[in-house]
Image (cartoon, rainbow, N blue to C red; front, side):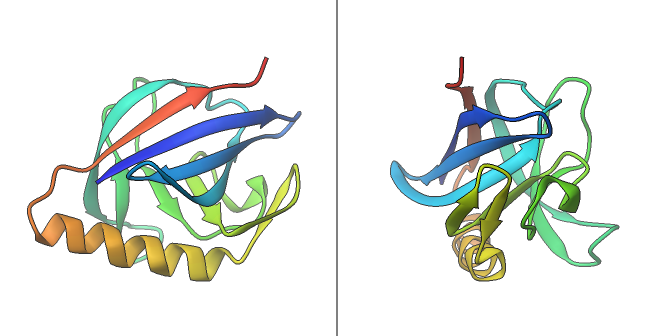
Length: 127
């Protein structure tokens, strides 16, 4: 499973992203503005201490630990993790996050169970 996070726009607080899964646009995302790292990283299954259940974890980002993919609508819903949803309401708000995360987790955990290598690539497209 290959995830590509194209950061489209930077606001004072956050980064608005388009999230592709295996080459197909599936979701939109938000991250705090301070998290502008780029590159390709492994994505693994991880028992989240803050959520109490398994989540996808982005591994190997220099200077950052515990970067998860989880539910949220605004940058205030995350410390640095990637939150995903199905719609862009504004540059600082995505919606239908619970449904998007449920769908993403179903596909991600199926890929992990099948022994697939899962990676996530971040690219800053904003100027």
